[in-house]
Image (cartoon, rainbow, N blue to C red):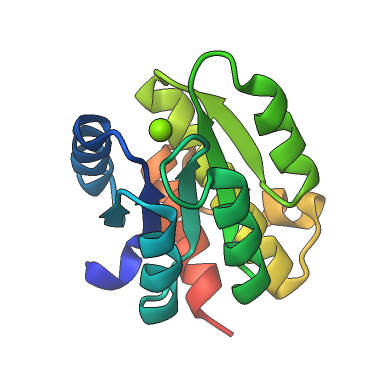
Length: 162
Ligand SMILES: [Mg+2]
């Protein structure tokens, strides 16, 4: 079962939020590494395979923008989703110009978060295998139903196999 999990790095300085979101996602086929500073996220990504990172924008120490930049620099296939609190939407939009896959506003419903992570992971697999969107959707529709968990598993298989 372990091999089917998607490796997710979450960085957020609000520890309560970090813990609750990590628990929810661990129950849904993610292997989560949760850290509370950008510096630790950079370090964690050096030492662990990471598929997707969920990065808070406002943090003490290096910011979410800087964390995004450093992660994308070092890890070619990683996709990053930015989390932003109220009032920082402009910088979140700016982040997508600098390579973030997408951004979400906090508080964020779990369904919306899962969809964003699923799409980001799909993008990662597409990049890595150089598959275009249309082909990817065809591949995903073969022999699987549309449950998010099955889509994630299918993506995982595609990511692993060569
Ligand atoms: Mg914060």
